[in-house]
Length: 111
Image (tube, rainbow, N blue to C red; front, side, top):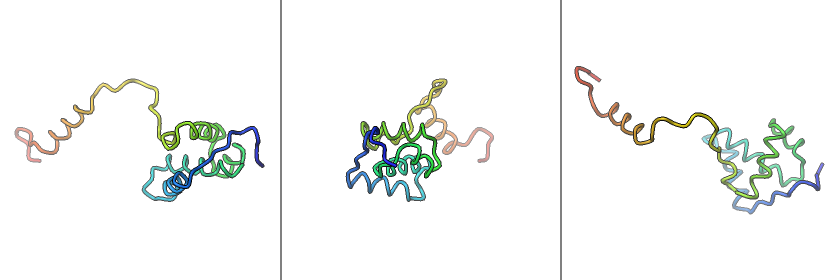
């Protein structure tokens, strides 16, 4: 089942414990939990197809996580910015709108 062509994923004890806690914790975002499970399965010597089949993930997803993790460690599991239209509103504008909505009463309003 092992594939000698694959770059081995070596986890320190601290990394393994962190990934296991992310994979098991109920409050972890499911995307992060799945990515943690994928990285945890890689040191077992399984190839990408086996990991994908056992975890219900795509082969490309497993390949991507296997190659990203050694280079960037825990940061490799974070979601990357998605392509698309850039934001038209800044964080400051969002904060201002939230404060105005929650703390000010509109003229003639009762909330």
